[in-house]
Image (cartoon, rainbow over all chains, first blue to last red; front, side, top):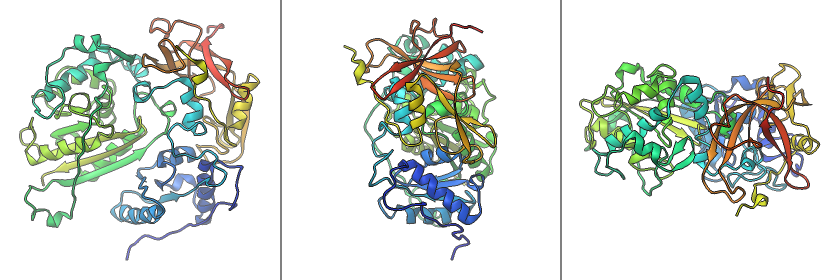
Length: 376
Length: 139
């Protein structure tokens, strides 16, 4: 028994052959019919689950700001699994109203996803023609706006890489150990102005995994328990050009504040922090969007050594995506480091780390998940 | 060597066709909600702010400002030299990606918040891209 019910259900207006709608619009058509069936409006929806299309694309298309998404895509049974996840999420209070959509232009093949950047996708029409070459030319786009609005300097941006190399120097498993200077960073090869090579993540091979179980059983395992104190998630946009604010990630703000409220912690409770650093500006955005720094102050906060070894807020203590490793989807490695810190087994162990906050990004400021871990 | 024909060519969908029909005849078309007056991009047949399906396509002014950019130094088959990938904030509100042309592709020439105006570049028989150049009528 659960306390959750399906309150709306409908199909697309037509079935069979629908050449007048893209696959994405089929999702919208089904969504609006179902909202009508339930007597709800888009503003009532705070969770989105889908497969085939991304929940990022569906939420952005419909104008939803969710704080729960499930992109579980394991074939035709995915939507049943979405329901199951939604029940769990709703019972635990992660969200209140979940919209699960399906749409597939299987016959007419209009605007059908599958390959990222397909010419009929929104990104294929409105971003790819202008010449982006992967994440280094897209994820980096907001930064000049941030620099002008808040006075961040090239040297401060470079210091993010310098400080993380200090941590990497303490970690035998890091890809790079040798210290670097601001000049080293600014003299490294230009990738996409204003980003130099050393401000961009590594590209390496690797993997990781986690096993979770009920807290009441956790003490029966050999390792000390690492409790999940809280978590949060959100999406904003499938296209970085459509961020609401280039100086702040809405997904960071929603996911981060949710995770901290869920955990019942304030900023002073965080002993250790990870912010997914695909590029050097990510820790700056993460610290500000989660309220660890005032807007515009994270660059100097990092440059002054506050997140470095011995600093008041140890950040990316494995060396991060800039110096430890980055396989493409780095979030697992950030979680592994948070677990090690709480267990007390990290290479660069933070003394008496009791609470670790781990902030991940998805896509290019497209999504975020945030987890707070603790030892009690 | 750069091969401009290797530039990715958009493929319109029913919801975006009006946009690409517009660029072909020298218009940058946006949509405005008839109910809440939100002007939005990219195209869709409903308002992303209030969900109203009563929306109107209109020709934008083509004016905007340089909101942010990078200068790509990574190889792309369609470009021989580093080039700007820009975010242009349109006078009507929405932001879109484009390239700034008609000026050196340097941080000195590409000044944030500089006024821009749209210019159109024919890519194929059916697709014309909206690009931006420094505005002749500087505010």
